[in-house]
Length: 108
Image (tube, rainbow, N blue to C red; front, side):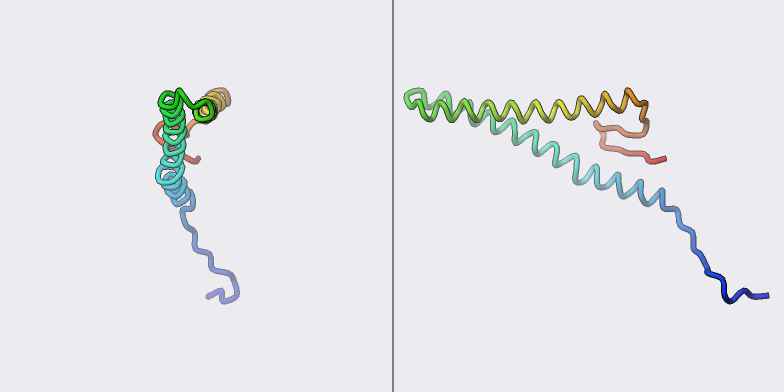
């Protein structure tokens, strides 16, 4: 006997698809973006240091160099702080399957 009026459902493994998608987003977008922002903060600090050293006679440029160095250090500190806090939260709550260093996420 055929059931013509019931809805036919196709089941798919959404977990595997989601794991692959999250892993790709993490490794291809988020990790390179974090690395780029960290490098940008270091370059900004070094630019400020260079500006400070090369312009010893000009007080205005020395002040600008100090400001660039300060904001570069703030950027580096924020990036390291977020990474450290994320690691502490993951270890404190016992969350397994997330590895920030490798950029892998395993959903369960």
